[in-house]
Length: 394
Image (tube, rainbow, N blue to C red; front, side, top):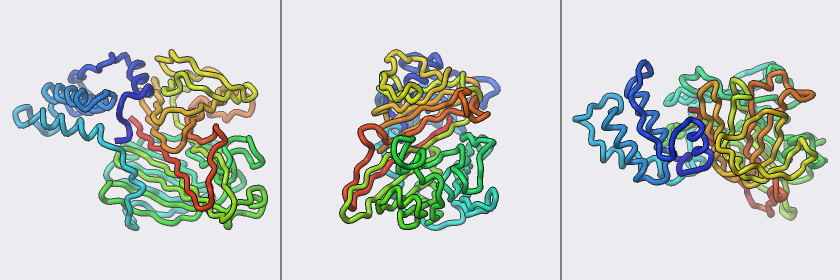
């Protein structure tokens, strides 16, 4: 499982909800799905425990009091099932992008989108999720969960779909420059050029569907090749798996003699009910660049037990952020979990009504895995870098 252990992000989210250091087994509720609902609740709580033994103990207690759906206490071997579930919750992480897939129409299809721009509609029949991935900018503009009824990503009403500018919202790909520190346009050119669709495929053994896009330096417009005279190949995989949405960016230096240097990020726009009721966990005690104060380096307080609140224009690039972060929307009673690899840093951004803000600023928060500090990435000829994120909405 990607979300395991005792990360500060998940402990913080639990603390905000009022749970103790060792979560108690939830009691059976009324009108919310009975034992089925509370079984799911207790499985989620078990993920926050520090060892398989603790997780197994909690699940065992939950099973005795509230058997999972379609099972009775008498037919349930709770001890063996608790051990199995605990082992599953704390299983080693697997790089699912290395598992080959097969072309399949069940995974999705290419469609004609706004103003005729092509996009891929990804579907996962196991989890009833959908995602829309535009070839322009390789931008994920929609990710729906819960029988494709609940939208997770924010897409601005002012988003333009005519190739004149990057799509505002969703998950734009920032490469080969994150931010405006460099000679390229803000956040680089990858989000404002057409990518090539290489595959739409099913990974049957993982219950996953994905699309694969690519971008080569030789295919860039002359203006970008002039500003960034390096040979590279970028591959971007967007996957709907059994846990949520996975995005993987892979960059290879195809130059025979020059190093390739870049910064990059996945600019997640998460949809929220009210920005002032959102808390972000995982930033505690981290050093960050404050872009609202002339790129001053500062340090976040250690005691953010209730999470980072957004109550002003916020634009921070945290150095060496943890792999696991969480966003709690107290109005929607939802948690967004972000697990990142290869991206050591993280940005938190919301304009909070500052000059030039999108009119919808109160309905989104950006928490973005990035590689920015320590001069980003340097690839020798032939080397490849990989950065990825997995998102889970609960």
